[in-house]
Length: 544
Ligand code: ACM
Ligand code: ZN
Image (tube, rainbow, N blue to C red; front, side):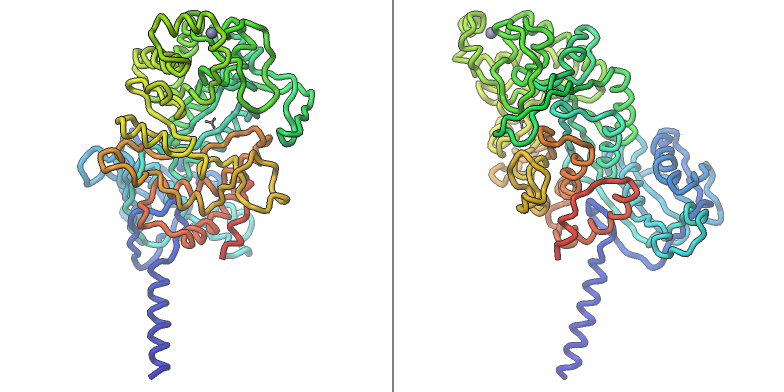
């Protein structure tokens, strides 16, 4: 009696285990149905595609995935009779679900169903690629050439999938430390793999201006370079004396935009104002209240030299934004708005006269006036602005979206005022914070503590909002500020795997999430991390 009871328990346990078998897919799809058998994918497998809109996606699959294994799949527009093909199919749902996809893997073929003008095919391909673990990892005895031309056995599954949020963002600060175009592309590849769709490119700062502006060439030529950098912890106040900097030409930026576009990622450029503008002022001192010549900043922090809201400044910013808007095709321009000390405005006759003239309450009112003027200009060009939550101070501009970083209160307040919101609270969305308490073995970081599980368990939609207000939460974003992140390897270390956890927060409904199951799937990413030479943080390997 006792024995058979244990046997039944064991059998039940086995059944449950097999049902929650983790496939190596991150973020976890909405639904997975398991079927018997496997599809055998090999260099003879064909891609059937009948809609020219899909060219980009199909070419991406060949040149970014199969090419690594020494072949490209043949493209055909007639369905092969003998099976063994991947086909791209029209959806059987009503139009408008542009990120949805179905991926159906049977023994004869694989089909991906999605809307041709959306991102669904691309996401279906990402899911498929995650399921393609090359056979060579199973046996090491294949001859070298065969090993390179890997074949894959793919389990028969029917996956139906779509995201929870529309804004699935990752940010990178290229100002405190500069990262070349090739690395930006690697970052975009990593984002694409986990179905992120917004890259927030933080392009201007006190410590460096990183985007070529043709009308004001000194921004990059002078503002792009500093005469040294803070080294070690800020409290030590130590500096090196090395000239440091760099910037992206507009041609390079166009190249990155095209690269992102092919990966269904929109780039949101950030042009900071009115604070964090020392680099611009170093190039054009007229932009500040004092007009004094200052160098590009070497320390990390918040600085009193900020844009003076006068006609010269607005003309300059409108010219800069005109070039930025011409370059970037996305809907949003990020205008910063954070950490703007008001000391120089308080002492400035022009600023005080403007407060009087416009009947503003105080310097916060002046900041609000500043952002509203910029919004009017950006809206007139058909674009929207988004800014850090300080833009709530003194009153929100009419159409602005808010990125909540000082916790979530700013995001909640904005959503209650019917403004769109991206949640990016320091805890847990700042990936420049520590991920382990064992600080002795971690690279020096800015502070804080955002371990992997805290990111995984984050819910961007605050319960304090009612159903109507919750609709204003567009999503969330992981931020990688680089005061203490000096190399590409270190960016990867801080971002991976926390961005994988965030990907699941942004895609998967909360009731389908499970941290232990996520860790199992994360371990299955290791061959991919190795193939792409990603310097991931390894703490999760110790999670039981
Ligand atoms: C910020 O971290 N200052 C937006
Ligand atoms: Zn002023």
